[in-house]
Image 1: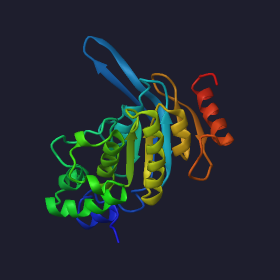
Image 2: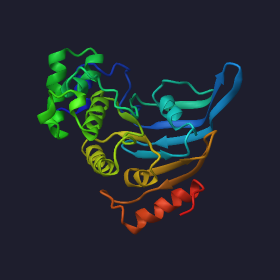
Image 3: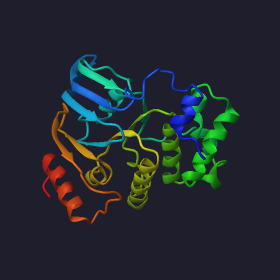
Image 4: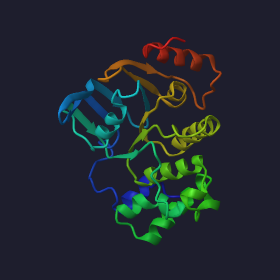
Length: 264
């Protein structure tokens, strides 16, 4: 039986924050604002009075215009920034950035195991823990391959596995498929849906793709233009997997677009 990343990290002491199971579940953002000061230029307010919650195992997708503070929101969730006002309460979170940021000189296996190595796990033990997950993610034949030898979709799978092996109960995903072509992106959306069903997490996923937000999210949070404010929170009460041609999916996509002020 394969150890889950959460089990592996706890057994190895990788998650050292001392959070209880109960505390590790939700993301709670309450009336958060964030402004960036700039030398000799006007300050830029990224977020204004934003509130957002994600329950245990829930996938919340966030959409909004460019520059509305979506990436800032994820960095607040991960503790990489602090709000100017409001509160952020979040279980330990792993960030998967838009670019895969794989080490070009390291194999797929070692890139996937990097989060375990950073937590103090020895090289061979980290490989031992990561190897079954490469197989589970359809990458067993490529464990020795360098990133340059992998397709875009494969690189994103390795990047996601690295985030998963961090053993955090919350995943913050920043446009994970933005750089992929349309066909690969559609394949990866289905793959991610399956992966999160098999290994549930509380997820906050930022995307510019409204259809992706509806296909993957339990709720879609719509932000306004800068400064980002929540203008809609749309429930997606549909069974998985979801079909693009499903009339309910199409109707929800149009509803999100309407909230963004985009004509159908």
